Length: 94
Image (cartoon, rainbow, N blue to C red; front, side, top):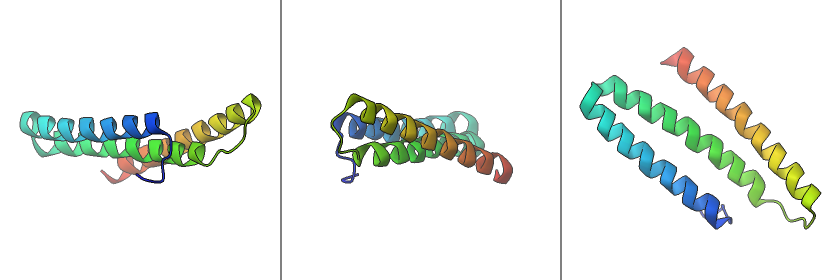
């Protein structure tokens, strides 16, 4: 994730990956393949949408509060759209 210049966002994404792997392993042991697959797909949806958010906010170079707010709102909108599309895809395919 070298393209993410924001250190707090990088830390959050790293923890999302760690928790996703832990949940895949735990739910795989408790509920078998389908539990692990569900945790993996849910985690991947979250990680991909967070990566899109991070990519958008990492490109921001402005210095005004208004510009930062607009960038954050655009990034959140993209994140929600990506989550919606990926969840739809997971629910229709799996």
